[in-house]
Length: 423
Image 1 (tube, rainbow, N blue to C red):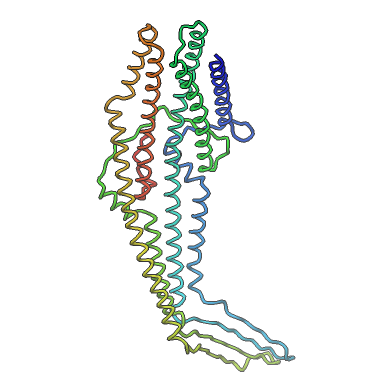
Image 2 (cartoon, rainbow, N blue to C red):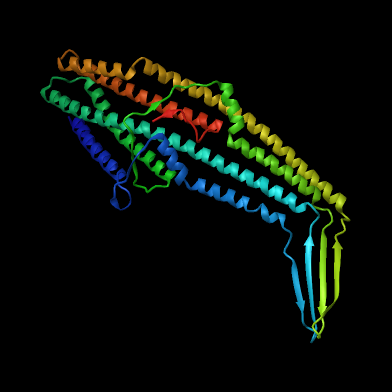
């Protein structure tokens, strides 16, 4: 009897805690409600527009692009005017020039680095979209389970009252009573645990979208997924052509190629041009002159060969890195393809069998049999647990398929086009 009272108390406290947590989720800063109807495209849009990592990557790409043009210009000239001798003025202009083509080579290096930075920004978008898709399906699953458990809590509360009356009247005293009490305690714990997990999912979305902490989300009435289609080899080829992580490595190879060209020019002679003149007291200019200096590459063979060799080694390493990344992406695409195909197969079996519809019909028959006293309470509880687990398994299959598609799209570099989900 004491245990029944305890379970009843925990049930009521669990409901109050859950209600308080849900109320907290519906209020943003200052207690003002802020709720968003969340679809998968909306989640992607919010992530792409609000995530700070994307803006940081874009700014770095912009900064890298701004370094290209300055590399084409030589150093600023040095202008000197000397008036230490009364009535006489001396002036001088000096310009240091590198070996012809050196500025262009440096601009090529900076341009390749800028292209690499743009690829990294694209890859950052791809990663954030993956996070948005996975976070959406995590929230979807927990939200659906939350609805199931709220319904279960009401039913368990009714069963608790029934069991209490049977205990008081002495109609039902058995080990099965203890089992039912344990089931009720587990149901309360699941409700509280899932509500907190749902809150974590909500906070995760807020952080991902850079929205206020109290922003909450509602799901649309229906969330459907299109059938899985496509051949594995086609996905592999698409990944090799569009995976932005591969593009980063390809641009790194280009940057190393440009660096090697610059290294071949790095220790060649530099030029120094010096032009001077003197203005006499009568105001005229005379004694024009110029000097041309050239650095002597005495140590050129030793320096240039070592520097060029190092650049060549770096280029070779970059090419190996690219090949390794391509192999890695191929493996990841193949793995993601198998997972997506498997997840879709299970979901399709559920849907083709009319799992939810059949479960609802079976549950209606169970309710009727129980109310007509044709089914004992213990069997009724067992059927109810199966009913809940079936719905939970279906929602899990949906979320797993959605996540598997997100991972496959991530690997093939699809973060702007069709994501296979129709909202």
